[in-house]
Image (tube, helix red, strand yellow):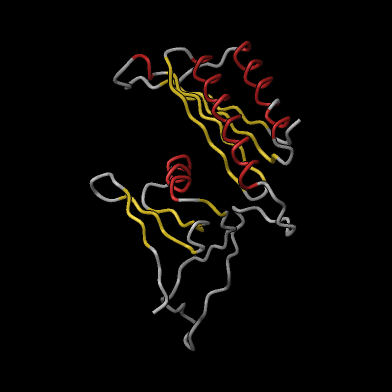
Length: 188
């Protein structure tokens, strides 16, 4: 069984039957991918949804060493939304295993953040440089996978990735008109 299955309900009361159904199916995800650290299931009811078929939302997030996978589905029935999101998660896990599943050996999670001490001048005040540093592991992917990961992770502004086809680090960003742009750094 996964180390941690967390179920959150927003704007609704979660029945015992629904909780048991979600726990039972979420625990099965470890059959597909062994090194899962956390499974988070968010179930919510959106009162302000335009369509009744979008009111029940199920979102599943799976975290492990070096990866985060997320699926979301909406329906007029909560169980249908969860089951569809679960099926999407199974497909994502299979695709992840087929393209990216290989051990790095360093044991670090992609979400690990290394914060460093900040430089101080002679007066003891912090220098106005970089406020925060993050280090993360880049998984090789193509541009289509980067767009999908950007959407799934909820990154609205930009997404840094290693383009396996061009063998370079690139930045995908969202433009004002809703389309995407791609920054391809070139050493000059």
